[in-house]
Image 1 (cartoon, rainbow, N blue to C red):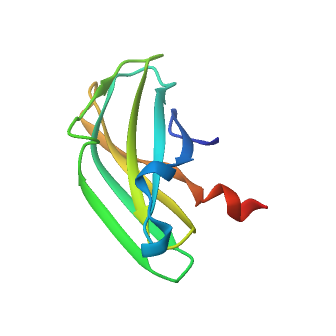
Image 2: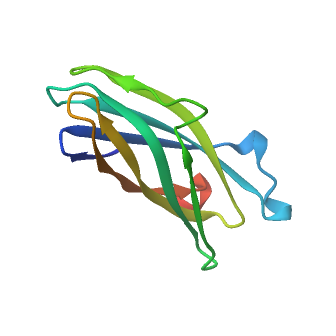
Length: 128
């Protein structure tokens, strides 16, 4: 698991290779990741947007951005957290992702950016 704290918001990431959804013979490798967003600040926040930077070992780079996460723009109260699971398909056995969330502080209507720490996507047999 990797974690990072930005402006009182802690992001934790866990990843897993989805062997049953992958097809290595066709260069199709599916990974799942679970993100937990913890609000360590004194104010309620809302996740408005996400931006991802996705890299694989062939040098391919992608950028994905949009509103919310998995169709939601959750409000996270102080001391609370929000978790979700999503996925990423790569054409190689090794890659990584990083990014950021655009958050909105409800008390003063200010927006701020929270870093999503870089995490690796690696097929387990590549670690041998």
